[in-house]
Image (cartoon, rainbow, N blue to C red; front, side, top):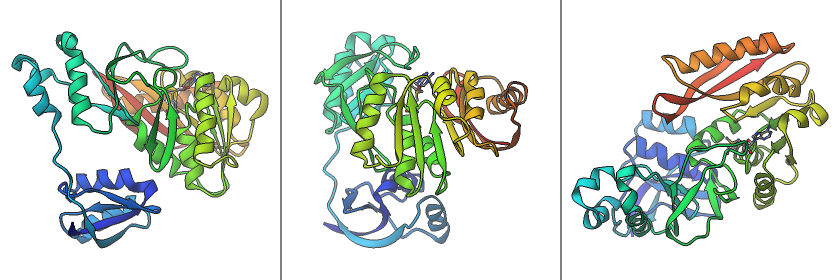
Length: 355
Ligand SMILES: C[S@@+](CC[C@H](N)C(=O)[O-])C[C@H]1O[C@@H](n2cnc3c(N)ncnc32)[C@H](O)[C@@H]1O
Protein backbone atom coordinates (compact mmCIF):
# COMPACT_ATOMS: atom_id res chain seq x y z
CA UNK A 1 0.00 0.00 0.00
CA UNK A 2 1.22 3.51 -0.76
CA UNK A 3 0.04 6.75 0.85
CA UNK A 4 -0.90 9.45 -1.67
CA UNK A 5 -2.95 12.65 -1.85
CA UNK A 6 -6.31 12.00 -3.49
CA UNK A 7 -9.53 13.54 -4.64
CA UNK A 8 -12.55 12.44 -2.62
CA UNK A 9 -15.81 12.92 -4.55
CA UNK A 10 -19.32 11.57 -4.39
CA UNK A 11 -19.77 8.43 -6.56
CA UNK A 12 -22.00 10.35 -8.98
CA UNK A 13 -18.89 12.34 -10.02
CA UNK A 14 -16.42 9.43 -10.00
CA UNK A 15 -15.94 8.98 -13.76
CA UNK A 16 -15.85 12.72 -14.42
CA UNK A 17 -13.30 13.18 -11.62
CA UNK A 18 -10.98 10.53 -13.11
CA UNK A 19 -11.24 12.15 -16.56
CA UNK A 20 -10.57 15.65 -15.22
CA UNK A 21 -7.64 14.54 -13.08
CA UNK A 22 -6.15 12.69 -16.07
CA UNK A 23 -6.65 15.80 -18.23
CA UNK A 24 -4.71 17.86 -15.67
CA UNK A 25 -1.94 15.19 -15.70
CA UNK A 26 -2.48 14.63 -11.98
CA UNK A 27 -3.66 11.01 -12.07
CA UNK A 28 -1.29 8.56 -10.36
CA UNK A 29 -1.70 5.63 -12.75
CA UNK A 30 0.46 3.32 -10.61
CA UNK A 31 -2.29 3.24 -7.97
CA UNK A 32 -5.81 1.81 -8.01
CA UNK A 33 -8.83 4.15 -7.77
CA UNK A 34 -10.85 3.15 -4.70
CA UNK A 35 -14.39 3.55 -3.45
CA UNK A 36 -16.35 3.10 -0.25
CA UNK A 37 -19.89 4.01 0.78
CA UNK A 38 -20.92 6.93 -1.39
CA UNK A 39 -17.38 8.14 -2.30
CA UNK A 40 -14.67 7.56 -4.90
CA UNK A 41 -10.98 8.26 -4.14
CA UNK A 42 -8.80 9.21 -7.13
CA UNK A 43 -5.03 8.98 -6.41
CA UNK A 44 -3.01 12.08 -7.35
CA UNK A 45 0.66 12.47 -8.29
CA UNK A 46 0.79 15.66 -6.24
CA UNK A 47 -1.40 18.12 -4.33
CA UNK A 48 -3.28 20.19 -6.96
CA UNK A 49 -2.20 23.83 -7.38
CA UNK A 50 -4.68 26.63 -6.54
CA UNK A 51 -5.63 26.91 -10.24
CA UNK A 52 -6.03 23.17 -10.65
CA UNK A 53 -8.12 23.03 -7.49
CA UNK A 54 -10.34 25.84 -8.81
CA UNK A 55 -10.85 23.98 -12.10
CA UNK A 56 -11.69 20.75 -10.29
CA UNK A 57 -14.06 22.49 -7.84
CA UNK A 58 -15.85 24.14 -10.75
CA UNK A 59 -16.88 20.77 -12.17
CA UNK A 60 -17.10 18.53 -9.10
CA UNK A 61 -19.47 19.60 -6.36
CA UNK A 62 -18.27 18.97 -2.77
CA UNK A 63 -14.82 17.60 -3.61
CA UNK A 64 -12.17 17.20 -0.91
CA UNK A 65 -8.40 16.63 -1.12
CA UNK A 66 -7.38 14.04 1.48
CA UNK A 67 -4.57 11.52 2.07
CA UNK A 68 -5.20 7.79 1.83
CA UNK A 69 -3.48 4.43 1.43
CA UNK A 70 -3.81 2.95 -2.07
CA UNK A 71 -3.00 -0.53 -3.39
CA UNK A 72 -0.76 -0.67 -6.47
CA UNK A 73 -2.36 -1.50 -9.81
CA UNK A 74 -1.48 -4.90 -11.22
CA UNK A 75 0.51 -4.67 -14.44
CA UNK A 76 -1.83 -4.02 -17.36
CA UNK A 77 -1.41 -6.03 -20.54
CA UNK A 78 -1.65 -3.53 -23.35
CA UNK A 79 -3.83 -4.40 -26.36
CA UNK A 80 -1.19 -3.07 -28.78
CA UNK A 81 1.48 -5.38 -27.30
CA UNK A 82 -0.80 -8.40 -27.60
CA UNK A 83 -1.79 -7.35 -31.12
CA UNK A 84 1.91 -7.15 -32.05
CA UNK A 85 2.26 -10.82 -31.09
CA UNK A 86 -0.81 -12.01 -32.99
CA UNK A 87 -1.21 -9.87 -36.10
CA UNK A 88 0.97 -9.49 -39.20
CA UNK A 89 3.10 -6.34 -38.72
CA UNK A 90 1.64 -4.62 -41.82
CA UNK A 91 -1.81 -4.65 -40.13
CA UNK A 92 -0.79 -3.34 -36.72
CA UNK A 93 -1.44 0.30 -37.63
CA UNK A 94 -5.06 -0.62 -38.44
CA UNK A 95 -5.78 -2.09 -34.99
CA UNK A 96 -8.90 -0.23 -33.70
CA UNK A 97 -7.80 2.68 -31.55
CA UNK A 98 -11.11 3.49 -29.98
CA UNK A 99 -13.12 0.94 -28.03
CA UNK A 100 -16.50 1.67 -26.46
CA UNK A 101 -17.25 -0.10 -23.21
CA UNK A 102 -20.82 -0.88 -22.18
CA UNK A 103 -20.84 -2.88 -18.94
CA UNK A 104 -19.07 -6.18 -19.74
CA UNK A 105 -19.20 -5.51 -23.51
CA UNK A 106 -16.48 -3.93 -25.67
CA UNK A 107 -17.50 -2.53 -29.06
CA UNK A 108 -14.98 -2.05 -31.87
CA UNK A 109 -15.06 -1.02 -35.50
CA UNK A 110 -13.15 -3.42 -37.75
CA UNK A 111 -11.55 -1.75 -40.78
CA UNK A 112 -11.85 -3.74 -44.06
CA UNK A 113 -8.17 -4.79 -44.05
CA UNK A 114 -8.65 -6.48 -40.64
CA UNK A 115 -11.88 -8.29 -41.61
CA UNK A 116 -10.23 -11.72 -41.87
CA UNK A 117 -8.51 -11.16 -38.51
CA UNK A 118 -11.55 -9.87 -36.63
CA UNK A 119 -11.65 -12.84 -34.23
CA UNK A 120 -7.99 -12.15 -33.38
CA UNK A 121 -8.84 -8.49 -32.69
CA UNK A 122 -11.70 -9.67 -30.45
CA UNK A 123 -9.39 -12.06 -28.59
CA UNK A 124 -6.82 -9.29 -28.04
CA UNK A 125 -9.49 -6.95 -26.62
CA UNK A 126 -10.80 -9.74 -24.39
CA UNK A 127 -7.34 -10.53 -23.01
CA UNK A 128 -6.31 -6.90 -22.54
CA UNK A 129 -9.46 -5.81 -20.68
CA UNK A 130 -10.20 -8.07 -17.75
CA UNK A 131 -13.77 -6.80 -17.22
CA UNK A 132 -14.79 -7.52 -20.81
CA UNK A 133 -16.63 -10.78 -21.47
CA UNK A 134 -18.10 -10.05 -24.92
CA UNK A 135 -16.53 -8.25 -27.87
CA UNK A 136 -18.84 -6.88 -30.55
CA UNK A 137 -17.90 -5.54 -33.97
CA UNK A 138 -20.07 -2.83 -35.49
CA UNK A 139 -21.85 -4.26 -38.54
CA UNK A 140 -23.46 -1.32 -40.29
CA UNK A 141 -24.72 2.13 -39.39
CA UNK A 142 -27.22 3.20 -36.73
CA UNK A 143 -30.57 3.16 -38.52
CA UNK A 144 -34.36 2.99 -38.32
CA UNK A 145 -36.89 4.57 -36.01
CA UNK A 146 -35.40 2.81 -32.99
CA UNK A 147 -31.86 3.96 -33.94
CA UNK A 148 -30.36 0.46 -33.75
CA UNK A 149 -27.12 -0.91 -35.14
CA UNK A 150 -26.26 -4.48 -36.05
CA UNK A 151 -23.36 -6.04 -34.18
CA UNK A 152 -21.45 -9.26 -34.62
CA UNK A 153 -20.03 -11.13 -31.62
CA UNK A 154 -16.34 -11.60 -32.48
CA UNK A 155 -15.05 -12.94 -29.16
CA UNK A 156 -16.24 -14.12 -25.76
CA UNK A 157 -19.76 -14.92 -24.68
CA UNK A 158 -22.90 -14.37 -26.78
CA UNK A 159 -24.59 -12.56 -23.86
CA UNK A 160 -25.36 -9.06 -25.11
CA UNK A 161 -27.53 -7.87 -22.23
CA UNK A 162 -25.41 -5.94 -19.78
CA UNK A 163 -25.50 -3.44 -16.95
CA UNK A 164 -23.60 -0.23 -17.65
CA UNK A 165 -22.60 2.32 -15.02
CA UNK A 166 -22.57 6.05 -15.78
CA UNK A 167 -22.31 8.91 -13.27
CA UNK A 168 -23.31 6.57 -10.46
CA UNK A 169 -26.45 5.30 -12.27
CA UNK A 170 -27.00 1.73 -13.48
CA UNK A 171 -28.43 1.04 -16.92
CA UNK A 172 -29.59 -2.43 -17.93
CA UNK A 173 -29.55 -2.62 -21.72
CA UNK A 174 -28.90 -4.78 -24.76
CA UNK A 175 -27.20 -2.82 -27.58
CA UNK A 176 -28.78 -5.24 -30.09
CA UNK A 177 -32.26 -4.07 -29.05
CA UNK A 178 -31.90 -0.48 -27.80
CA UNK A 179 -29.84 2.64 -28.51
CA UNK A 180 -27.15 3.65 -26.04
CA UNK A 181 -23.90 5.53 -26.60
CA UNK A 182 -21.27 5.81 -23.85
CA UNK A 183 -19.85 8.70 -25.92
CA UNK A 184 -22.80 10.84 -24.77
CA UNK A 185 -22.09 10.38 -21.07
CA UNK A 186 -20.88 13.96 -20.54
CA UNK A 187 -23.88 15.29 -22.48
CA UNK A 188 -26.22 13.36 -20.16
CA UNK A 189 -24.47 14.99 -17.20
CA UNK A 190 -24.28 18.47 -18.79
CA UNK A 191 -28.04 18.56 -19.36
CA UNK A 192 -29.03 16.93 -16.05
CA UNK A 193 -26.90 19.41 -14.12
CA UNK A 194 -28.85 22.36 -15.56
CA UNK A 195 -32.20 21.15 -14.19
CA UNK A 196 -33.40 23.03 -11.10
CA UNK A 197 -35.46 21.80 -8.13
CA UNK A 198 -39.21 21.86 -8.80
CA UNK A 199 -38.96 21.54 -12.59
CA UNK A 200 -40.99 19.28 -14.86
CA UNK A 201 -38.89 17.75 -17.64
CA UNK A 202 -40.03 15.93 -20.77
CA UNK A 203 -37.40 13.62 -22.29
CA UNK A 204 -39.02 13.06 -25.71
CA UNK A 205 -36.63 10.37 -26.99
CA UNK A 206 -35.53 8.81 -23.73
CA UNK A 207 -34.11 5.41 -24.74
CA UNK A 208 -33.21 3.42 -21.62
CA UNK A 209 -33.19 6.65 -19.58
CA UNK A 210 -29.68 8.20 -19.31
CA UNK A 211 -30.93 11.83 -19.29
CA UNK A 212 -34.10 11.11 -17.28
CA UNK A 213 -32.63 8.88 -14.60
CA UNK A 214 -29.51 10.97 -13.96
CA UNK A 215 -31.73 14.08 -13.68
CA UNK A 216 -33.96 12.31 -11.17
CA UNK A 217 -30.92 11.07 -9.21
CA UNK A 218 -29.40 14.56 -9.01
CA UNK A 219 -32.52 16.36 -7.76
CA UNK A 220 -34.95 15.86 -4.91
CA UNK A 221 -37.97 17.56 -6.38
CA UNK A 222 -38.35 16.88 -10.07
CA UNK A 223 -40.80 15.11 -12.36
CA UNK A 224 -39.51 13.60 -15.58
CA UNK A 225 -41.74 12.19 -18.32
CA UNK A 226 -39.55 9.78 -20.30
CA UNK A 227 -41.00 8.79 -23.68
CA UNK A 228 -39.75 6.27 -26.23
CA UNK A 229 -41.34 4.51 -29.17
CA UNK A 230 -39.24 1.33 -28.89
CA UNK A 231 -40.99 -1.19 -26.56
CA UNK A 232 -37.63 -2.77 -25.64
CA UNK A 233 -36.21 0.64 -24.68
CA UNK A 234 -39.23 1.35 -22.46
CA UNK A 235 -39.00 -2.07 -20.90
CA UNK A 236 -35.33 -1.43 -19.96
CA UNK A 237 -36.24 2.12 -18.94
CA UNK A 238 -38.77 0.75 -16.43
CA UNK A 239 -36.19 -1.69 -15.08
CA UNK A 240 -33.62 1.12 -14.78
CA UNK A 241 -36.08 3.38 -12.96
CA UNK A 242 -36.45 0.66 -10.32
CA UNK A 243 -32.71 -0.18 -10.26
CA UNK A 244 -31.89 3.49 -9.58
CA UNK A 245 -34.77 4.00 -7.14
CA UNK A 246 -36.37 6.94 -8.95
CA UNK A 247 -39.89 5.47 -9.27
CA UNK A 248 -41.40 8.54 -7.61
CA UNK A 249 -39.75 10.97 -10.08
CA UNK A 250 -39.65 9.35 -13.55
CA UNK A 251 -42.78 8.40 -15.51
CA UNK A 252 -41.99 6.00 -18.40
CA UNK A 253 -44.26 6.29 -21.44
CA UNK A 254 -44.30 4.06 -24.53
CA UNK A 255 -45.34 5.88 -27.69
CA UNK A 256 -44.62 8.45 -30.35
CA UNK A 257 -43.43 11.60 -28.57
CA UNK A 258 -45.45 13.87 -30.87
CA UNK A 259 -48.68 12.07 -30.08
CA UNK A 260 -47.95 11.60 -26.38
CA UNK A 261 -47.31 15.33 -25.95
CA UNK A 262 -50.46 16.27 -27.89
CA UNK A 263 -52.63 13.84 -25.95
CA UNK A 264 -51.29 14.08 -22.38
CA UNK A 265 -48.42 16.50 -21.81
CA UNK A 266 -49.31 19.87 -23.33
CA UNK A 267 -48.15 22.95 -21.46
CA UNK A 268 -46.51 20.96 -18.64
CA UNK A 269 -42.76 21.24 -19.08
CA UNK A 270 -40.11 23.67 -17.88
CA UNK A 271 -37.59 21.79 -20.00
CA UNK A 272 -37.69 19.45 -23.00
CA UNK A 273 -34.85 17.12 -24.09
CA UNK A 274 -34.79 16.17 -27.79
CA UNK A 275 -32.03 13.64 -28.41
CA UNK A 276 -33.07 12.31 -31.84
CA UNK A 277 -30.51 14.12 -33.99
CA UNK A 278 -31.60 12.82 -37.39
CA UNK A 279 -35.27 13.79 -37.02
CA UNK A 280 -35.59 16.21 -34.10
CA UNK A 281 -36.49 19.11 -36.41
CA UNK A 282 -39.82 17.37 -37.16
CA UNK A 283 -40.71 17.51 -33.47
CA UNK A 284 -39.95 21.16 -32.66
CA UNK A 285 -43.67 21.96 -32.80
CA UNK A 286 -44.39 19.20 -30.27
CA UNK A 287 -41.55 20.39 -28.01
CA UNK A 288 -42.92 23.96 -28.02
CA UNK A 289 -46.38 22.57 -27.28
CA UNK A 290 -44.97 20.63 -24.31
CA UNK A 291 -43.54 23.76 -22.66
CA UNK A 292 -45.49 25.72 -20.06
CA UNK A 293 -47.33 28.75 -21.49
CA UNK A 294 -44.65 31.07 -20.08
CA UNK A 295 -41.95 29.08 -21.93
CA UNK A 296 -38.89 27.11 -20.91
CA UNK A 297 -35.71 25.47 -22.17
CA UNK A 298 -35.25 23.04 -25.06
CA UNK A 299 -32.12 20.87 -25.35
CA UNK A 300 -31.95 20.13 -29.05
CA UNK A 301 -29.63 17.80 -31.03
CA UNK A 302 -29.01 17.56 -34.74
CA UNK A 303 -26.38 16.18 -37.13
CA UNK A 304 -24.76 18.83 -39.32
CA UNK A 305 -21.77 19.48 -41.55
CA UNK A 306 -20.29 22.55 -43.22
CA UNK A 307 -17.98 25.32 -42.03
CA UNK A 308 -19.90 26.38 -38.94
CA UNK A 309 -22.29 23.51 -38.17
CA UNK A 310 -23.35 24.76 -34.72
CA UNK A 311 -24.25 28.20 -36.06
CA UNK A 312 -26.22 26.75 -38.98
CA UNK A 313 -28.29 24.48 -36.69
CA UNK A 314 -28.94 27.43 -34.37
CA UNK A 315 -30.14 29.63 -37.27
CA UNK A 316 -32.39 26.94 -38.76
CA UNK A 317 -33.85 26.15 -35.35
CA UNK A 318 -34.76 29.78 -34.64
CA UNK A 319 -36.43 29.99 -38.04
CA UNK A 320 -38.51 26.83 -37.49
CA UNK A 321 -39.66 28.03 -34.05
CA UNK A 322 -40.63 31.43 -35.48
CA UNK A 323 -42.38 30.07 -38.59
CA UNK A 324 -44.03 26.88 -37.33
CA UNK A 325 -45.00 27.62 -33.73
CA UNK A 326 -46.52 30.45 -31.73
CA UNK A 327 -43.29 30.73 -29.72
CA UNK A 328 -40.09 32.74 -30.03
CA UNK A 329 -36.48 31.92 -29.15
CA UNK A 330 -35.51 34.49 -26.53
CA UNK A 331 -31.95 33.27 -25.98
CA UNK A 332 -29.49 30.68 -27.23
CA UNK A 333 -28.03 29.39 -23.97
CA UNK A 334 -25.41 27.16 -25.59
CA UNK A 335 -24.55 25.79 -28.98
CA UNK A 336 -21.69 23.35 -29.47
CA UNK A 337 -20.24 20.33 -31.21
CA UNK A 338 -20.81 17.19 -29.14
CA UNK A 339 -18.82 14.71 -31.26
CA UNK A 340 -17.86 13.78 -34.79
CA UNK A 341 -20.19 11.03 -36.08
CA UNK A 342 -18.68 10.61 -39.58
CA UNK A 343 -15.96 12.43 -41.51
CA UNK A 344 -16.98 16.12 -41.48
CA UNK A 345 -20.37 15.37 -39.86
CA UNK A 346 -20.95 16.42 -36.27
CA UNK A 347 -23.61 15.99 -33.61
CA UNK A 348 -24.56 19.49 -32.51
CA UNK A 349 -26.24 20.47 -29.23
CA UNK A 350 -28.22 23.70 -28.98
CA UNK A 351 -29.85 24.79 -25.71
CA UNK A 352 -32.63 27.29 -26.32
CA UNK A 353 -34.69 29.51 -24.07
CA UNK A 354 -38.15 29.74 -25.62
CA UNK A 355 -40.87 32.25 -24.71
C1 LIG B 1 -30.61 8.63 -30.37
S1 LIG B 1 -31.63 7.65 -29.33
C2 LIG B 1 -31.42 8.52 -27.79
C3 LIG B 1 -31.76 7.72 -26.59
C4 LIG B 1 -31.35 8.37 -25.25
N1 LIG B 1 -31.86 9.71 -25.14
C5 LIG B 1 -29.85 8.35 -25.05
O1 LIG B 1 -29.23 9.41 -24.95
O2 LIG B 1 -29.28 7.24 -24.96
C6 LIG B 1 -33.25 8.14 -29.86
C7 LIG B 1 -34.39 7.34 -29.24
O3 LIG B 1 -35.61 7.91 -29.73
C8 LIG B 1 -36.55 6.87 -29.94
N2 LIG B 1 -37.55 7.41 -30.90
C9 LIG B 1 -37.46 7.52 -32.24
N3 LIG B 1 -38.57 8.11 -32.74
C10 LIG B 1 -39.37 8.39 -31.68
C11 LIG B 1 -40.64 9.01 -31.54
N4 LIG B 1 -41.31 9.46 -32.59
N5 LIG B 1 -41.15 9.12 -30.30
C12 LIG B 1 -40.48 8.67 -29.21
N6 LIG B 1 -39.28 8.06 -29.29
C13 LIG B 1 -38.72 7.92 -30.49
C14 LIG B 1 -35.72 5.68 -30.41
O4 LIG B 1 -36.39 4.49 -30.15
C15 LIG B 1 -34.43 5.86 -29.59
O5 LIG B 1 -34.48 5.11 -28.41
